Image 1 (cartoon, rainbow, N blue to C red):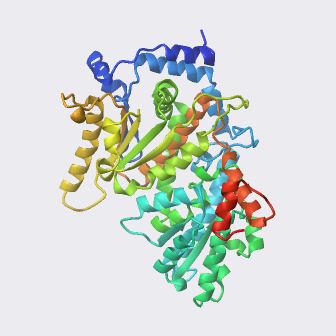
Image 2 (cartoon, rainbow, N blue to C red):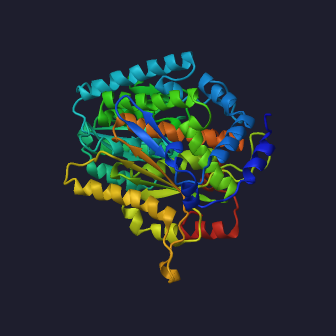
Image 3 (cartoon, rainbow, N blue to C red):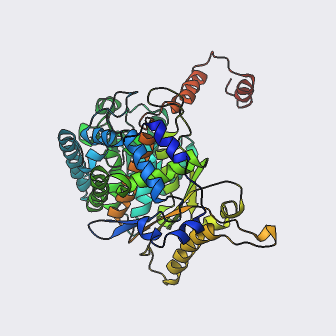
Length: 504
């Protein structure tokens, strides 16, 4: 008998709460049941949820919740290019950029990608003169995704030195200026509407820097990445240097579009295509696999278990790989802007939604925040991410120590250690999942990001919220505009701060 949402939640709430040690003692096949491997064209990714509190019974009831939530129907709408963002009446077609989606959208994406490929290859071939540097200005998804990908994939050899600038604080832009030669620098302006105040202010300052340093045609050094090409033309960008993307692609899902231009410039077109291919492999898995075998959905089951049923307010991500040092920043926007909501799709009050996403890089984080994770009072489910193959060519001892620390932390969090001295006692029973890649190449990187995207979507469907709008970011912007325009009165604290800063 099919359950309703309420019945599914009620069934989930009735489950007992054994410790992780008890779960392992009760089921010798636990690791096999809760681990799965996703194969890519070369290599693959191992996912291990055995150190979470998921059980066969919980998974069965979560599958019932997914059915009651209409997960299969919502997933079908996502890939069919139908409206899945009801508050804005939009589709969400980031998977079409990778070749998985509505046929017409895939064809349009292929045409736009070919346009970008021609420009990228022309720049690498010297058609725009010698290009050693790119200053990429954007904000939010227009910056976080490119910054992560460039940092992760171009450490061996960057074909062009890329600097991603998002902050309106001029210190960030000046830092990029100091690292670049104006005579060999291009500027990419990434803005969906080509009106974002932080991005356009930084773009104007970048053009002034070029002009002040002897570049005769600063606008001719600009590449525009936008869903509003007509705005870029009005701004003065040559049509041949405008790379459009579809309106149905949200900012935090946009690195696969022309927003990925700085990635392709840094790593080369072949690796950019490999990144898309890895993501497409996850798209196909997510689209075609049901129930607990669907890996992003299974991850969402664990997420929901801890936030809704165990009251966890945060989720931590620790990459034991320096190349993924920016991953927690990227996931913060993806998860918290998508699912940081307080009402359901119908506008009714929801239960707990997105936890606070945070994290760091191992082994640095072990000496900074792991005290709280081992002995603090908060329940914090953790994802560990590591690569079997090293990203360096130093003594293998470096990577061996890195991996040993990663696996040891998961083991210690689970088992703990009892002591008569309360200061030296570790309670254990603290959950973690591990994502272990064979090697962090472009395809694997793409697969990891697509996995995170679909995990976020699956969470939203189970919680009955819309992950594709972000109205919560607008109010502060509106007030900032009122401050700039003048004539408005604010609360006494804000008025005092404006006066102290000389803004009123």
